[in-house]
Image 1: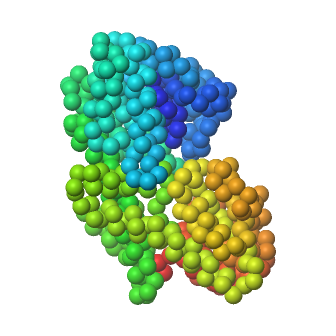
Image 2 (image 1 turned 45 degrees about the horizontal axis):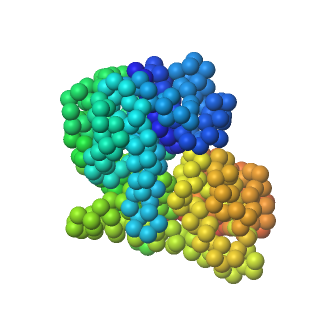
Image 3 (image 1 turned 120 degrees about the vertical axis):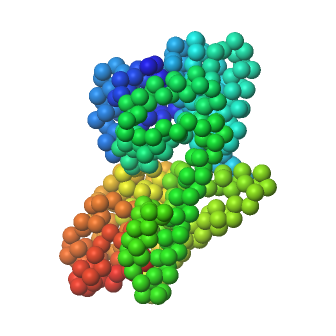
Length: 432
């Protein structure tokens, strides 16, 4: 099939690479010329584990191309995927739809033959109706359907999730459109379930899913706080919880709170939609407030460890919101660092993939290390904020020799507490 994808971010690019790998002819479209120039030259503009090899393979085969021209990418396409950003409004926190509406309006004039226009972006309920209206207004003669095709790709695991989906949700209000999407995903029909629902239900499923997972993360973090006070071990508690098939074992890992481009944005947007519809989404509202507070508290936990040290130096390992990605949007690590900076402490940080993005957010407020050990030199406390595997494999003897004060605040529980304490460190993890 011939596919046009509008947007080359953390959704559009992995989706485009994946669809090309399945044998489709994919054209990725982006207004930002520098991005397209880089992609054409074989340079990835985001980091995703496993993406690079498939990107080069399909670009060189000709199945994956890039353009700034909407006309070039849309004409003769069987399916057009809209995968542009829906950033939160700075005041209301509702999803900002200007990029979606602009894409719908621009693509309308280039539709040829029957085309399915699918929204991949996470969008408020009713967006499909709005997109359909915009296209029909711009091009009344167009033969098309609009479907909701929500993505469930985890950042850091997007390539894996594309080829191993646990479900495919299709919000289609016509059988004709549903049949096109079914054909597109034929390679998955024997290994995953495709659920066909109406368009508004599909839009709601995406928000409901992310809000529920965010609540699950916040719940296990609250249980971790309880375990610290009561003497229980959060990992034993989480294992017991997860053995209940009604609960499941996933998303029961304690940490500094959720972040990234999805959960913070989507919980806020869902809460806003609830208020707009006079529905009290109290659990979601409480999760948002609790997660914000948790990140503040984690910053205070680190500061507590250096409260009696003059001009303390803090080594921070991890700036991305999770491992496997370079994305720092709404990263708990960035928020925690910001809390630390309010107390005028010296911070030297390292992240294996996210340094450029972190620099765009933090500027020269902190120092940036060459590697883990460079960050630790002369430090009074080591704060582990992102769960990169290499941070759990540190040479602890070398770490101790480098640090001025052997103190570790492990907000991802990557290290073995007994082993660390035997070496003479003061150690504090989460939920133990």
